[in-house]
Image (cartoon, rainbow, N blue to C red; front, top):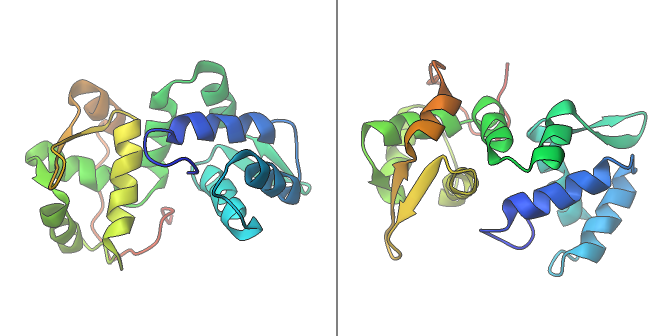
Length: 179
């Protein structure tokens, strides 16, 4: 999200508030470019809008961006649990990361090959890092240390969000979960 780590939920909420007004994708992209310094292209702006769609917080209906029930709930409550649930249910690898970290806290350098062993064929470490940043913002994981941080599952909140969901292991490289 624009603004970087530590601002994801704030920015996400601002984008959802604008989407709730029923804007076209072009209007949404223009809003994002105008609102967030550093977002200079329509392509980048549309990629941020796409994140809201993948998370199940917005959808395109009759050419207009609309918030879903989950998107409306997050706008109304500002609860990170709404986004945590979307991450776990809709983003490949999040449930599996929680599963691995609940067994043993680890650095990204050890987590990446462990995820590869579970069939996640990610091309860059950034694909794992982005997931960890989102999970950190939603209080699913905690990062300890600076140079080579270790990631820990955040107690009951993460376990409750994960529930009895059995993580799948198969070869996947995308973002959104496939049915």
